[in-house]
Length: 113
Image (cartoon, rainbow, N blue to C red; front, side):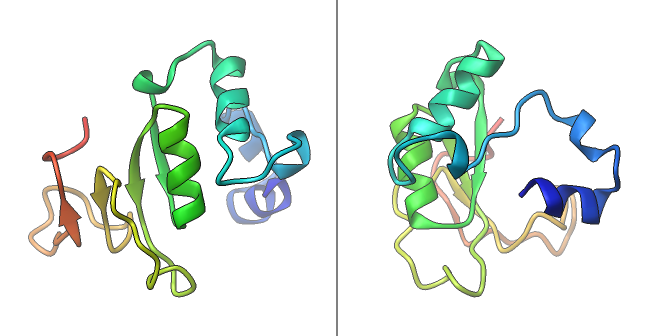
């Protein structure tokens, strides 16, 4: 994750984030919420103050267990998974809400916001 940020966003990218945690920082992997709880602690926030963007069922389960609202952007590897419980499922994050091409897969409670 850290090397991906650097290679795609540049060497200074890590400074854009107040907390970056990975599976190496926790003893239990997703769907356990430990990694999200650790980030929430780092930021001194609770789950209701955050929005999680995930691409997998395990990520969705972990984020929801940490009390976070969740937007799902399925990948080619996870598009077959069950995303019930997500607040919003989007094809991708490239299209803004105001775009005429914007068509979410599923909208449960209206726009997250």
